Amino acid sequence: MQSLNASRTPRRDPAPSRWAYRVHRMWLTPFYRAMLRVGLPVFVLLFVAGWYISNPTNRYAIVEKVGEIRRSIETRPEFTVKLMAIEGASPVVDRAIRDMVPVEFPASSFDLDLEAIKAEIAALDVTESVSLRIRPGGVMEVTITEREPVVLWRRAGGIDLLDDTGHRVASLKARADRADLPLIVGEGASDAVTQALALIDAAGPVAPRLRGLVRVGERRWDLVLDRDQRIMLPETAPVAALEQVLALDEAQDLLARDLTHIDMRNPARPTLRMTEPAVTELRRIRSYESGDTQ
Image 1: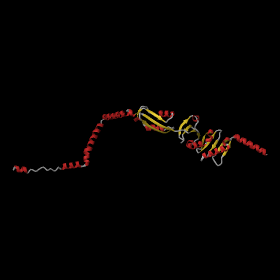
Image 2: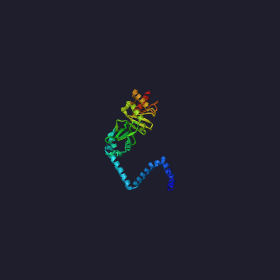
Image 3: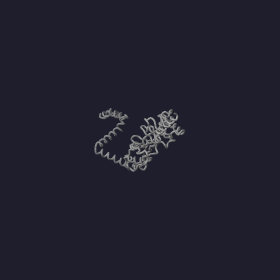
Image 4: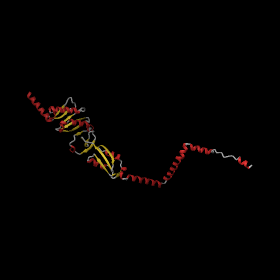
C-alpha cells in the first residue's frame, strides 16, 4: 500500500511561476536591460559623488587640486611669454605701445588676452592694421601698419596729420615740424582730402608758390599762393577750373600780374581782382588818358 501511495505523489511542474515569468519577460525588454546595466551603475556613481562633494572639506580639496594642476600647466616653459617684439612701428609708436600694454614679462600665454591687447593698439589713430601672435621661443609679436600722413589740417584746436582717407594720424605743435606736407585749412577739410590731393597734384606748375588750400563753406576750395594770391575754385570740377587758370598763366603770365583773386566759381566767366596799388595806378592812367582826350 505504501508503494502505491508513493507512486501517486504528484510530480513538480517544470513551468515557471507567474512572478518568475514576468521578471524574465521584463529582463528581455531592452529598456529594462539598459536601466540595469547602465542606469543603475550611473545612479550609484552619482550618488557616491554627490555624497562626497556635499562635504565642504572635500570640495575645497578638489578645487585646490584642480588649481594646482592648472598652475603646473600654465607655468611650463613652453607656455611662457618672455618678451614683446614690435614690427613695423616707428620709435614713437613703439614706445607708446609698450607703455599702453599692461603686461609684465615673463607671463603665461594663458594670462594674455590677445584680442583685448589688439583692440587697444588698433584704437591708436596712427594704426591702420595690427596683428598679434605668439612665436615659438616665448615671443609675443606685434605687427603694425601705420597710417601714412599726406597733408596737414589746421583747425581751431591745432594742427593734425591726416592720411589719404582723411583719418587723423597724429597732432603737431608747429607747421614747421612737417614743412614737407601740404596744408589744408577750414571746417570739413578732412572730409575732402581726396579732392584736395587731386588739386595739389594739378597745381604742380605753381607748387613752389603754393601755401595751402582753404575749405570754404564745407563745399569748395580756395587755392592760396604766395603774394596773397587766391584762386577761388568752383564746387564742381575744381580740378578742371584750376587747369584752366594754369593754362592762362602759361599763355599770358596771369599769376605774375598784380592780382589778389582769380574767381573761377563760374568757370564760364572768370573774374580778376587787382591789388590796391594796381587799381590806383590803373585809375591814374585812365585819368591821364581822359585828360589827354579832353
